[in-house]
Image (tube, rainbow, N blue to C red):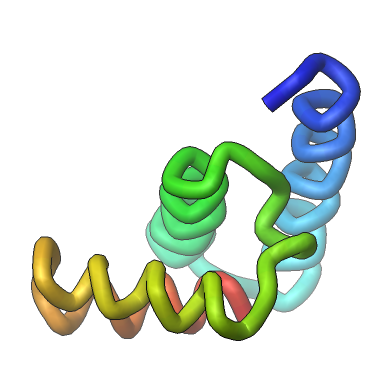
Length: 80
């Protein structure tokens, strides 16, 4: 990501973490959901809010092939 995109990602990421805390999520859940956001951002090298449905489907297809089903479910829930 370029510096502008990285700054935008960091702002959105911190907001996401705050919202999870306000929802009363456990710290382990927050950590897992945060990891999901970082993982998809690294995969596409962009903010996840800019991804199309097709890109997300491609990502999860690849994730199913490389990770456990429980990881896929946690990542899906972390990105909702």
